[in-house]
Length: 116
Image 1 (tube, rainbow, N blue to C red):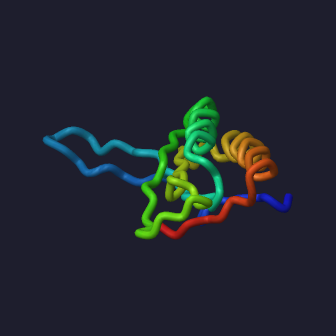
Image 2 (cartoon, rainbow, N blue to C red):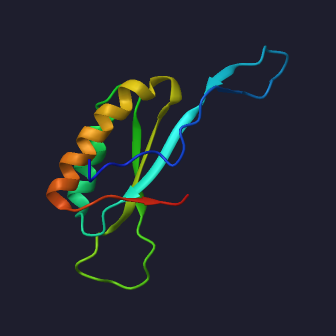
């Protein structure tokens, strides 16, 4: 797909949480997170994309603040979108995320991956 967006990295395995007050160590699943933006995507549509992605079980999303110091009417009021989910669920989540991002990318312009 021309509008394909993949995570910057697809970590596997687990991370161990810090042991606290004599409790056993908890094993916390590895998280996949990536950040994207579409330069001309309006704020309302970013909110719609985030809400749409949150409907996928195990996916959390949020909006990034705009970092530009100059106002440009044609640029988005949002710096981007972050997406996070457990690596164990990647097989299910990634297909659904890709479908949603492709839909919005086809209508509003390509997504670009942001560095963390």
